[in-house]
Length: 570
Image 1 (cartoon, rainbow, N blue to C red):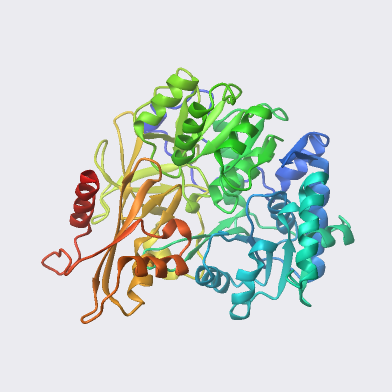
Image 2: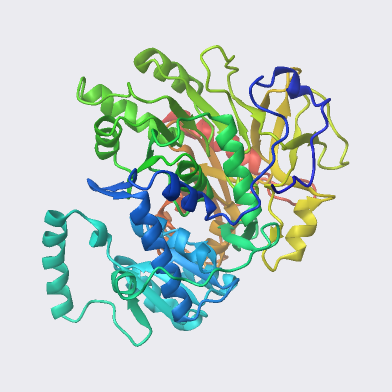
């Protein structure tokens, strides 16, 4: 067993209310991350691992395909530590590729399919990825930026590759027509995902790992400078978080069903759907893109036992349930998890009264490999409005004064800091961020929080004004950079205001360069061309000047108050 590098002192306040059946300290398997798949395939070879568009795949089949993909990558030249980028939605290829890349010794670097060309280029250059697995529909975007990156070999797949036969025939006919027109992906160093699996054998070369040092995932998250930051997650980081989840939410091995709607390219979706699900040999029903009716149909048809989503999804599902009485059911759900954005308090009451389900709110971030706080999923557990619950085993936490570093007591707001074996080893090629965010082994999360007298934690907001939109984190400076780069805008200040459906919506205030004239809709067009859709402001407001402090800093809180008042008027 791998030893935790740090054990939490027993006098921590939250331990007095900790669940009796969950130990404060765990021992973790000293194995590579893909051990979870090998164990599931060995113990439950004929159990269904994946369901996609109605087609099922067993654990034995999944392991075989992952082994074949690992062999293919090694034959293409992948060496231990190489970065393999993924530009994929939720699909079986992501899961096969995830396990296969790890077995080949590679480090996975997933990209958001919604990235603009600029964002994709920045991420690929920074990660130093030489290989990429890409959806054919996203190939044109990659092709435009590939020459500016280090990508040498491209593996292309179609969303229909793992469709059931009737659907595959329909889509195949359409794709054949596209190929005849010469529009399909092609090139000397372009390979088909399906072809590689067919041509390879499962006898990949085993790689030796130091799980506490070797990277499994390079997860990109934004930064206040607008530049992406690569969060380095080792095999141990992800093993620990998967093991923590396994202890926190007890399941029945080989008998659970998860509907996976959170994007797999996000570490929260990766952990809650792929690694944690596999640790229980669960059935994973894959939703490629969230839509209410297919998601509700999957929960109902497959009698899902676990579902994790952002608040916006729960709001949308509730609306559709009420519009279609009796058509769908949440009856089978035993775990209904919420996170990645603040939950409106009345959402808890809605799900309790309408469906008899308890929303279990938690908290995590890329830097802690997924989830690190959670409320308890038991009927008798107390719900405290707005609380994210308790830290996981082997997770130490403190609230500090960001200016002085002083540790604060119960109910005093400050910056949340974390320590534990699942905390990132640092940011990729970014010593400045490492120096700011990691001090004496503690991760300074940048989130403002408080802990009450009984050890329940509450997130109050982001220290650097990060905006949460539908589960995504949006960093104002990135949007401000895009607006200010137009040479039309003198200054930009981007803020977020509460929005019931999305969590927050984005408002951009700008001043124009002297003598320049431009309409808000023209600036919005620039944003759409240079930013992922969820980062585009809801509106842009032009001002003659910005409210400022004596030191001439823009006072964003004044703009935020102004925006909220204006919204209430409309």
